[in-house]
Length: 114
Image 1 (tube, rainbow, N blue to C red):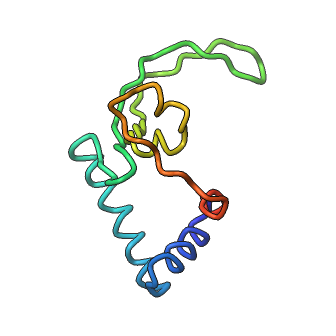
Image 2 (image 1 turned 45 degrees about the vertical axis):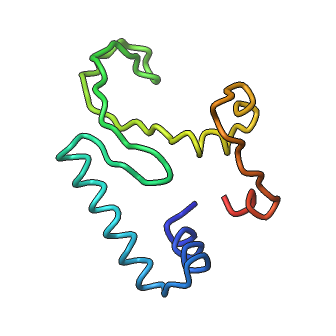
Image 3 (image 1 turned 90 degrees about the horizontal axis):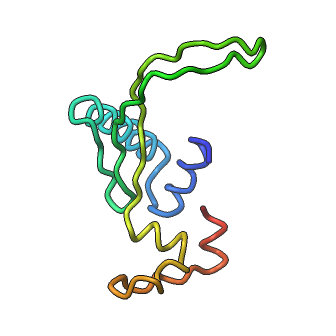
């Protein structure tokens, strides 16, 4: 989903104006960036957590020449979704764990909106 499509979907779902949605989105991006840079993670309530992870240095290959290259250590972002979202995406997993409540059933209209 592109930024404009997301803004349109939020407008329809919330009744906010386009300018309010754009301002909200811009603010959300800034808050998430700040949280990741200062705390190493950012919680997105109802969705999951974005966390900074470290990747070790490794050997790679140049796809054009096949030459070995060194890829240095770097930081990356990982997303861990909350169980509610996990089980909504994978309803077959709900029955395996008796402590997990049943996932809400989605209609065809809800599947198209994602």
